[in-house]
Amino acid sequence: MSAQAGDLASSMAFDASYTSDFFSNRRGGLERGERHLADLTVSATLDMEELWNVRGLTLFVSGQSNDGGGFSDRFVGDSFAVSNIDAPTASRFLEVGAKWGFGEDGEHGLRVGLLDLNAEFDVSDPRALYINSVFGIGQDLSQTGENGPSIFPTTALGVSLNLQVAPQWHWLNAAFDGVAGDPNHPKSTTVQLHRHDGLLLISELQRLTEGRVEKLAFGVWGYTQAAAHLTAEGSAHNHGWYVSADSRLGALDEVRPWRTSLRIGQAEEVVSDHDWSVIAALNYDVSRPIGREQSFGVAAAWIKTSSALRESAEDVDDYETAVELTWRAAVTDWLTLQPDVQYIIHPGSQRSLRNAVVVGLRFDIIAPTFSW
Image 1: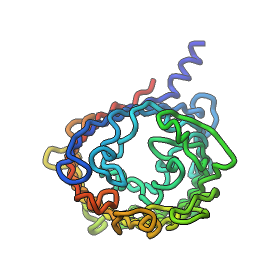
Image 2 (image 1 turned 90 degrees about the vertical axis):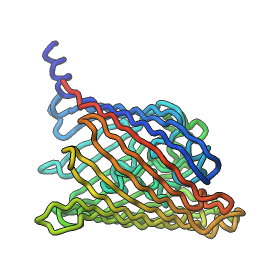
Image 3 (image 1 turned 135 degrees about the vertical axis):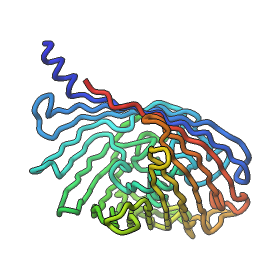
Image 4 (image 1 turned 180 degrees about the horizontal axis):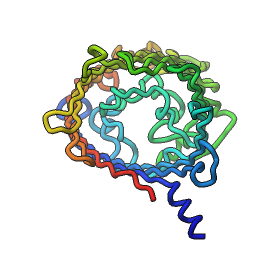
């Protein structure tokens, strides 16, 4: 019996991190004000190959506890979210399921359960530096669905398949419940399947290399259930696409601290508040002078207001833009600090709102992976 317990313990691993943001809207937007936001993330995995000799199978679970949400809604009025941990105060599961790596070297992957779409799709390493949520997943996709797509803070049941179709090429496909969680109970993890929910289908083709262009991706997505028109009677199926490229600048045989990211995406105009988005980022990664990793970056995101929204609402501008300047520095092996400045042009695409200036500070505490 003790041997069985030892086998179980050795196959388990735990991770935890704590992220804290303090943001202050200094000018423009809805009104001046500040707020503290917090996110505690805990995750665990169980290696079934180690435990029961089931090759490539891993069980996983992750949960988050958030506090202080509503900064953008209360003070800025933007369409994105100044902080990517801005969520209603609650504790909830983010992912619960199983993943199976198969193939000769485990080069293919299957995941099933409560899944975060943005864990695999529309992912960019350079854009992950930034705090504004618009740089994590494009607005054209994140705005969709009755309760958003299956992303933080509310996820849905789904299944995803990652196939390596060539040495540098991966083809990802997934299907998710078309309505994530329960729109009437946003603070709880809810799984409910109804025929009228439909599905969110998404496919992404990736090319991953160690060359100048580190990642090239093209994705398409669509909902099987139609959504109501913004301006007229009737409905339409929301669908769209995105293309992105992450690159390093400089000769291949040199240290290349400069990184860039460019993304363009589009959604169905008649059912979307914003139908086009463009994101660009420029990062500089360095480990000097204190010997620890540091990253400097400037990024901008432009989203076009759809003609349907302009026709259905007053005081709506043609576009909205977020510009972010940030510096992320590892202070110790477990603590990272990140001063941040953001400039929001036409918050919420509202002409009546002045451009907003937001300043903030993030600190991350990351606990080492714990396993027996």
